[in-house]
Image (tube, rainbow, N blue to C red; front, side, top):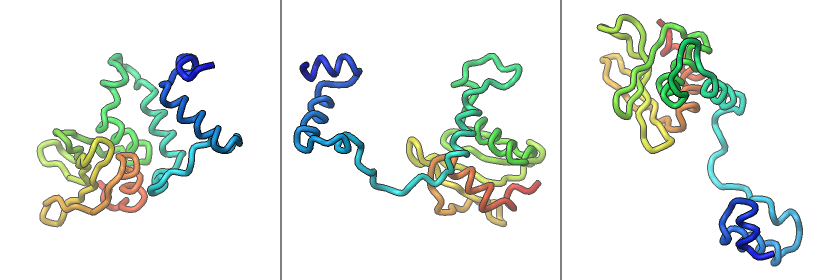
Length: 160
């Protein structure tokens, strides 16, 4: 059977099929077909936290009829994540590439933390200083990682 026929049946490109066939021909053992270990830092968010966020994103809150994509924005997921961990007093507001976690009256909010989008999937965690200016923390990662770090490593910043 040719590479194009295999590709059509399994739903990939002929190039991919030819690559795997060549890899197996060079060393005909099943272990060769396993993906090699990937470089980079291991995931910083426990699997349980990732699963919980996926569960939030797959459920529609009561009374909401909009699509899940419109319902679960980054700020909505952040608020749900924080509320599930006992921080019901916070809310999140998104402006451009920034999500601010705050509480208190809307006219005079208490700012707790800010997430600034750095790349498509990575965010930067910023904290307010005593002068209420935002200071970078040097912590960069996926939003779920930063939310976990905020709750686990800086819980005092979320006090009402």
